[in-house]
Image (cartoon, rainbow, N blue to C red; front, top):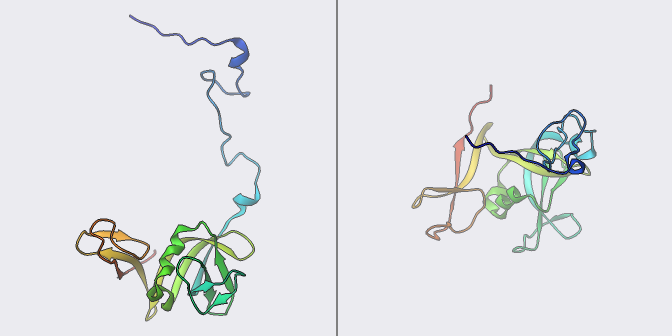
Length: 166
């Protein structure tokens, strides 16, 4: 029978107190054990309103110029939020058809009225709908407008009733 022993100099075998394992293994502290940082103070919020285009100063803009803009969200009571620049879900708002709809969004509040999207639903006649872009030729679902990644046909905006929450 073959046995394998791993050896390392004693100086490299120092492990965190109460930990055992092979030398060289890095241990991360469990997030629940770490001190609370500002990033861990994220609050999930749900808002209703409309997606809007923002200008360079972060103010509402009447035009959305191709590629050189950011999106925000204006609630029914006119409170204005902006989405993080790196929020890929905000690409859905490239579609004017989505911006025209009454929306309900669930987002992580990142402070200073900045949001990171979690879920986007449309609201019609008091009911919630999942919205997405779809290619009926390739049966591909996407969350941003544009051509299908497969056949290059323009994706179509679709709505399906959102599942009832219990």
